[in-house]
Length: 239
Image (cartoon, rainbow, N blue to C red; front, side, top):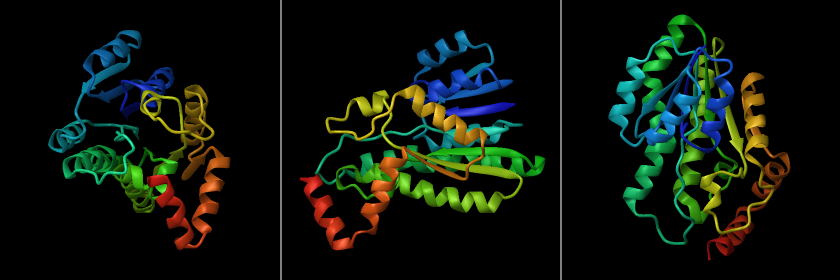
């Protein structure tokens, strides 16, 4: 089995590389940090480091078209700007959308036709529970992940039944991304537990998997409130 994992140099991506190194013939570990990728490759002989900036969509498309015989792609890479009540500058917004959303299609552009030809494959998209609420203080992140949800649904039904598409929506997991948050993170989960759940969802071919359930149901309840009440609560958070 040949796998691509993006955002492989740290956090969830790095942990997934370690776990799938026991099952895969080859893992293409994609990230910007070449030193961290080399340390992974030194630890696991079936890991091939791919130094790639996912905001460089031209290079991402080139890589996706050159690579062949991929059985699974885990699109895990994402960035998040610091939470702020300020209106996001265009360049920051664009970079977030490029990495969190557009890079996914740029990568898959060359891989999906090859999977279709072989009539097999699995595509895993790592979204977020943050996609279910338009948080005013993290507008680019919420928007990029909500776009990813729609993309996942479209892709899943376009490629059915031969190619599996799995959309995973985690809550807060202890990584260097969440470490910089200076606000309370409900139901914050240890990295191992979070990746356990992600791996289970992948191996059981869940179409969509959101966790932890307590936070997911709280968000679902919030979204059932009248829009005027939702707005009042979100405006308090933004200040």
